[in-house]
Amino acid sequence: MFALAASLPAQKQTGFLDRTVRSGTLTMKYQVYVPPTYDGHASLPVILFMHGSGERGSDGIKQTQVGMPSQIRWHRDWFNAIVVMPQCPDDSVFRGVVAQAAFAALQKSVKEFHGDRERLYATGLSMGGYGVWQEIVDHPGVFAAAVAVSGGLTPSADMDNLFVSVEGDDPFVAVAQRTKGLPIWIFHGAKDDVVPTVQSRRLVQAMRDAGTNVKYTEYPDVGHGAWDPAYADEELWKWLFAQRLTKASR
Image 1 (cartoon, rainbow, N blue to C red):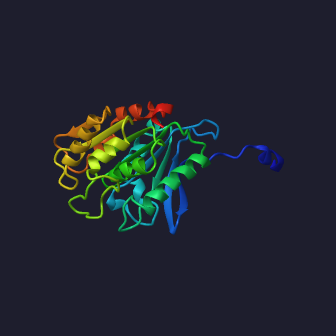
Image 2 (image 1 turned 135 degrees about the vertical axis):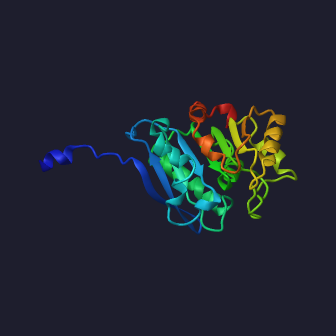
Image 3 (image 1 turned 30 degrees about the horizontal axis):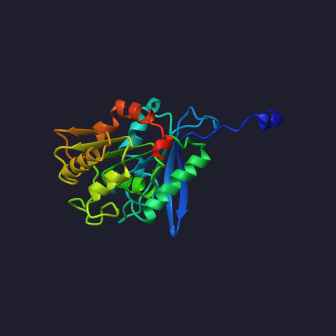
């Protein structure tokens, strides 16, 4: 019996898995969702999900309870993908060393789970929406598509330190130029008084002026919590998983 057990292949871990990554002086906790279909052989797409300010901390758990991770629990059949969920420390944002650590968690997960480097995606809500643009700016040619929800580029109504670090006098034009041609879908609530809707509107216009065919969904009766209807839309995930990095977009 012991010989038989030893000869059986080790079962691959799936579900929400605890991980840590070190980048510079920062040790960051993150979780990785591994779908039940994972067998260690197929190369799956990998999504970097960045949470909002309310999920900051060091427990490694809170960032899995709002937005995309909660949809995974309701609709696991939608997500045949590896999902990387770093947790931003208290009083920090996804910029500088924190953004570097989040990207390190993504790279570590791609290696650990044999992710498809032609199908790496970035998404985030609120503070994490800012993080999406920071990661795209910091790592051009890496991501195949981006989805930002209730995010922006300049400080929000309640966080002076929340902004995207990018060169240029106009951050909207600068980010539009750095994301030119990238498949993008932006969501925002028309009644958002935390990150004003004008942030997404300005960015969408700048992207369209730059020649990017960006998708934009604005919910007329929704405030800051646009991530609930956005991430609950199955069409978003069908669209996202259809995107693939090409040589022209690198």
